Image 1 (cartoon, rainbow, N blue to C red):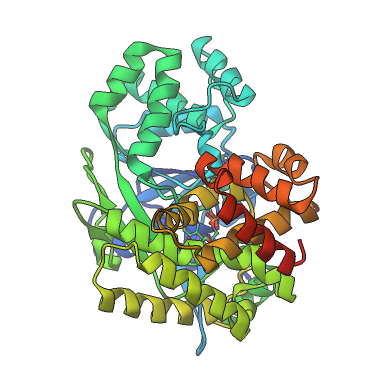
Image 2: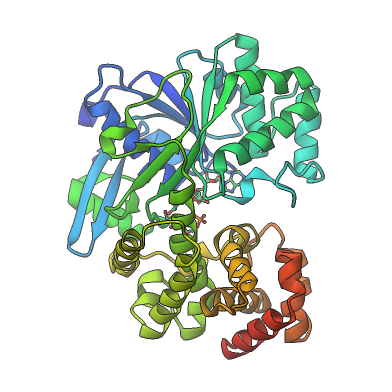
Length: 455
Ligand SMILES: NC(=O)c1ccc[n+]([C@@H]2O[C@H](COP(=O)([O-])OP(=O)(O)OC[C@H]3O[C@@H](n4cnc5c(N)ncnc54)[C@H](O)[C@@H]3O)[C@@H](O)[C@H]2O)c1
Ligand SMILES: O=P(O)(O)OC[C@@H](O)[C@@H](O)[C@H](O)[C@H](O)CO
């Protein structure tokens, strides 16, 4: 097996013009993949310096292979690999010196982010959670001039402190996490953080940093040893950090890039004035169905999305959910019907092993975005939405099982469900949204479905 190095594949590193925080699977299958396509015909190619969000692990194998990796694109018909060469630096996010130097470079005009929904450390009102002890510690560090912060908002602000001090010019911040209004949402968190450190810094951010809104889509499960073996067999290279994904990809962006950007349209990205219609369609139909399956399908013995939708019962659950969500999408019915048909095929892709327990993480951050808006609209119309109720019931079952709950609110939620089922349901719905918890008819319906799922 050949080692994967720049010398072996004759790929010189491109100059660093973009930074990324949250060096995970999705960044490699999506934003870096678009940048690779943009570079193919550019005389000003973009190299990316990417930083891990929490642990150094993801950076180590990539650094050992000069940032190179393969994207393994799998569809029902087979596999193909694509080599990505635009990742030029792979760093531990804790490397505060390199992080600050990267953002202080006037050549860097774009900062993309994938730090998970929970990574933004938002309070219930959507602003930064200043009561979060990690956030408070980071604010104190930056006030004292110490760059060794640990949270994602802390790192973003620390980088912006360095950029401002270097007078390196404006920057576009491009969040690529599944949040509602991700541009303004992240702008708020970052500005709240900056204002807690230094009011002038917050003013500088308001005038110099553009927060771009995005809808992002490409199903990208965690890479397994089997995937690494397939890539080795197909390419002949010992790639320790390939990423597996589907052929479909979407990137819709709205906002300004005051310091330029790669020509991502070359790979199909779309610049629009408003991402909202794309965002609701994606968060409700795709992510909502994912969460429904993640929580309810284990009750029928399934562990991946493809297994679940091969079961007509679970497929029926998804269709019911889609009927409910579709009633509230301001989109052309024929377009939504096409999207649904294509989405069911994507879910059924037997070569993508998307583990339900990966999707089940952080339900308290995801359900309010993916499921609750549709349930609330249905209840306002006097309806009891079967799909939405099943998603909520499945979550209660998951919380009551208790063993695999990974969520920033895990201790509060697992304590809340440690009681009779009807009380557990009411408490959990209250924790999600006061109106849902006070809705007696809904609490009853969720309790009945949770019982049926074995909660
Ligand atoms: N995987 C997908 O199919 C997909 C598709 C669309 C959007 N996304 C978005 O991308 C995010 C990352 O997905 P992934 O597949 O790359 O996951 P991953 O586990 O491969 O990588 C997650 C990255 O986020 C960092 N991170 C995790 N928790 C964090 C926290 N609390 N604070 C700061 N950083 C943190 C990790 O260190 C890592 O760098 C998702 O949460 C989602 O918002 C993923
Ligand atoms: O990545 P998460 O954890 O936000 O959510 C899990 C999946 O629903 C998600 O990754 C989808 O696969 C993705 O959003 C598809 O584009």
